[in-house]
Image 1 (tube, rainbow, N blue to C red):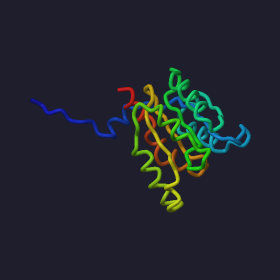
Image 2: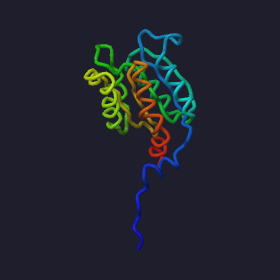
Image 3: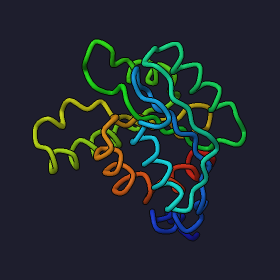
Image 4: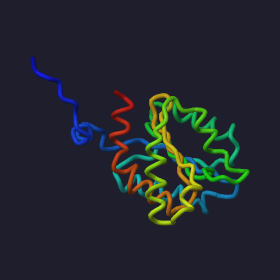
Length: 173
């Protein structure tokens, strides 16, 4: 009898989609489409990585509004991943972490752990203030990033772009 061999991450990636359809949501009480540097950067990096932008929006840091948009996008068959930026800190107005966490079917704690480790290498102990997170809702990847363009670049270049297709493949198996 032949023993079953588990696929390696490289084999999984070989069968992963090359292009993922993403919705980008900026959470901010002050940003406009003209001043949303982080949302624009995320879209630019995703496109450069071969991914598609299904849409984007800016919403105030109000939990009900954030949840409504995430629910809508996760119900849209054209969206495979929802990437949020902003609202992940610890100020009294930062409520994105709780709003998104309440919606997740599965959590990927390793994303936040790795993001903070990489962030620590760049900014030191202040990395602990980030509540970046990732998980799954309704078969979609949901990622919450800080509002800083540098943090978004770090997360996209080191974590999301190399693994986004793999994440989508795994969540749809």
